[in-house]
Amino acid sequence: MAENIRLGTVAGFRLGVHWSVLVILWLFTWSLASTLSDTAPGHSAPTYWIAGAVGATVLLASLLAHELTHAVVARRAGVPVSDVTLWLFGGVTRLGGEAQTAGTEFRIAVSGPVTSLALAGVFAAVAVVFRQLGVANIAVGVAWWLSGINVLLGLFNLLPGAPLDGGRVLSAYLWRRHGDKVRGQLGATRGGRIVGYALIALGLFEFMTASILSGVWTVFIGWFLLSAAQSEEHRIVTRQSLSGIRVVDAMTARPHTAPGSISVEDFIQSYVLGDRHSAYPVQGPGGAIVGLITLTQLRQVAPGERSTTLVRDAAMPIDQVVTAAPHETLTALLERLAPSRGSRALVMDRGQLVGIVTASDISRLIDVHTLEVPKGADRVL
Image (tube, rainbow, N blue to C red; front, side, top):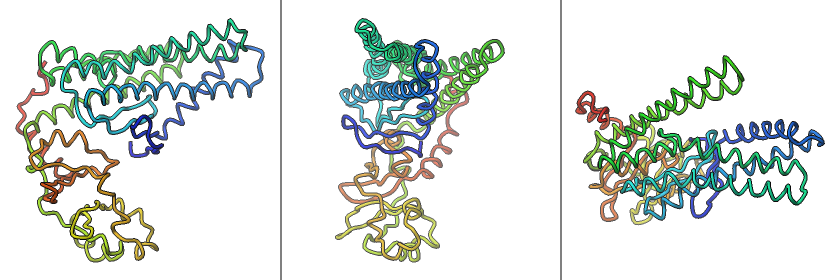
């Protein structure tokens, strides 16, 4: 999700919004406005659209509450949280680690749907109170709509298949039952494939017998879940193949560094051109590493400003760069890497730079070690 718009922090978590949120905001506004025109007659068209926009906005806040609950429970359990992002299919809470027990996995997973169902109860109570107080029927309709959508959101997320919350619940159950975390995760991805195929079949049935739009949307959701489950399974198998491998085994030792005091133009001419590297740790006064500069950061400097912009000013600050210890497991590092943070990590040993791990380093290691995975190793159930 590289197209995220960062909105700051909420409850201490970095919050981002993907551009696709505009799609669901419009869809829900249109859907609610259309529903209200039938269930709450007597208002003008602009009033229905305003009510639809208000309801859709509150629904996005409900989605945010769902994701923030995951984040809060994870943080309290000692699992780092990288960020929370709203996008087309609701939201994603990206964790910087994994639960250490099946109970923790269960609590993190179930907290989101529980929040959605609790919000459904709150909105239903608001609707009842509004009706008793004689509030306009359009406000009552919005409250009932929010209640119903949150019920659907909570129940849908409890479907037993990864990457849905219900898949994480299934994973925790299988983990507890068999004492094997990987077995539980693969069982959840299998459940995700089943749910995906079932939704595709349901969508095709709707397409042929009822609503074309509803059918297409259901097929699309099913296809997304199927693809996500397959990707999740590939990730789990890859992590399994890398079990026990250390960062030092994947890193490029003694990486080329860049002085932060020279201009971007001089850096490109003297370092980048003719060099195969695409990422350089940036040295500050005294040789301390103060950041990381990549081709991405260089492209963001306008050609006319390269001669007046210093490398240290164009670089990603060190507090935003992923760092790792040489003897840390590679799987632990993978949990912290993200495209938004350069997909690279600086390897530090007692405060000294000893290496850098890039996406290409990890890809090569994955290619090599997956050759050692026996055929059928991804079918442990």
